Length: 350
Ligand code: KDG
Image 1 (cartoon, rainbow, N blue to C red):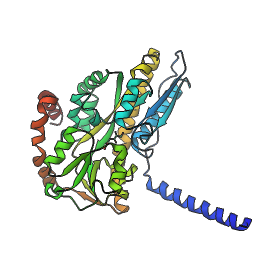
Image 2: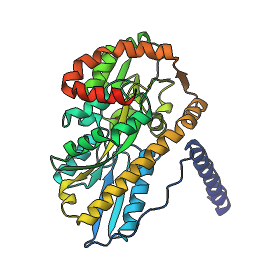
Image 3: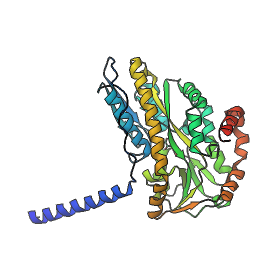
């Protein structure tokens, strides 16, 4: 191949790549800029390496939050704590990452609460359908007494729970047909998180639910092992589910938080001032990450529609039909979660 053809070929490849990156760049919605670091440098002894693993991808709001966490911790420790980020379940899915923290082979992770319900039964509060009518109610609970009590309860079994972030309000997608009523779910194979309440929700709604790790979801959708799934808009886009799903229904049926966890073995090696630095950084990361996800929902819905997905926004009457059909789930789980806790959250939305 003569040099000119090479250059022509290379320039063509270059152009194609540029085109591609431009396309990808155009696909990724504008994220709010990462804020400046607030607070002074923390003086403390020792140098530390911290690996932080998550299951969602690099183009999601959660990863953006981690980038802010990394910036705060490295700047305010004057480089004495080095943070390495691992998105996309590179170091394992939620359950694998949590057990890696317990064995001390990983320092931090931020899973959804749903896969951890067998370890922390009270987390099931977040899996009850339609319990958090607005983000405000979610913030009141996470940043209030209930949220703090849950962090304290989860600081056991080799784990230290230091903060909350947000996965978000979950939306249904599928590859078969538009869903506007529970009856449309008849016979649809829906992937759920590995969580007994989510299985109960979709069974009660008339679908055929299958529990599965998030790390296996895209392939299962692509191969038609399951017809549908449910996740927040930001996760639907950042995981490119719109490439294997044609229909989305804005159900907002469950609010899922992320909980920020540290390995107790790593934590106990940190000087107290660095422990406080990680707590401060986790708080700022969580607040920023909530803002990122919420500020992008409308833009993402538009992008998904532009990508060819049929987005269905339910009327209040249609939402009510889902709420009424799924109400029995509360009777099944009230005792395990605690009626008082559920009533406290309900009171917060009055
Ligand atoms: O680590 C990623 C999971 O925490 C998260 O995406 C869970 O919403 C989730 C799902 O559907 O598995």
